[in-house]
Image (tube, rainbow, N blue to C red):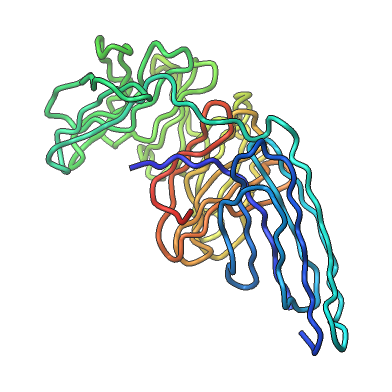
Length: 343
């Protein structure tokens, strides 16, 4: 299942103690009374919780440079404090303060309709359903012997993009009306086509195919016309302005990393640089962040990255469990994802 979280964090990078004691006091003000995330870490996380605004003290710190990041929905700020060597005796205190602007942490209220795929057998005969986000009657949109998955609303909410076929043989990209009528296959290729997603204006579709031998991202018109290979990779996601596509690929560096590329195939850039896998990039509605999940901490954790600067912030700590496949809320205030987390 997917779990919705209000995200925000205080990230403390703990570095390298003597006879006295060093401490860092972090004061967080504002936040509209809602939770923000407070994280402290060294080589491994020491503290990561959703907390209310207030003052937090970290003691017995070694000397070094400490980065503190506070975020709540659209607000993100990082400050650095240089902690010197502890005094011979007593406590040496270093202070940081953050003021979260009003309105940066709005309350989540479920609205609209949730679109999802489900099966009673867990293997085949997957069908598509909708349910009101606030709860209510479930509506079944498809009832076939095909494997129908990965549904996605069109930007105008009038159509549904999804994949259809037999998971053991071939899968195609299809589209239908929002009420389940007029289902049409957009691709009918011997190789499977999957992971389809709309462009922001609804005029084009990106999808993953191995039709020319490579596992690659292709684009085509919303009617299936003019398919064109873009780049080797998986997990495509259009930027909100429609100019770029983020994706995962292991073809260039030997392990799966997050990249962005212009939709004409130019200016490919690598965003993540580590020896573990990074997957499932997802753009924030304003285009300022890419959420993704990473294996760099042992399990799978959620991260966000600035697609321009490459700066990255860790969102979850799950102690070797799995947090994956993030999706932003329409207002950019939170993330839905698969997995579980400590609160």
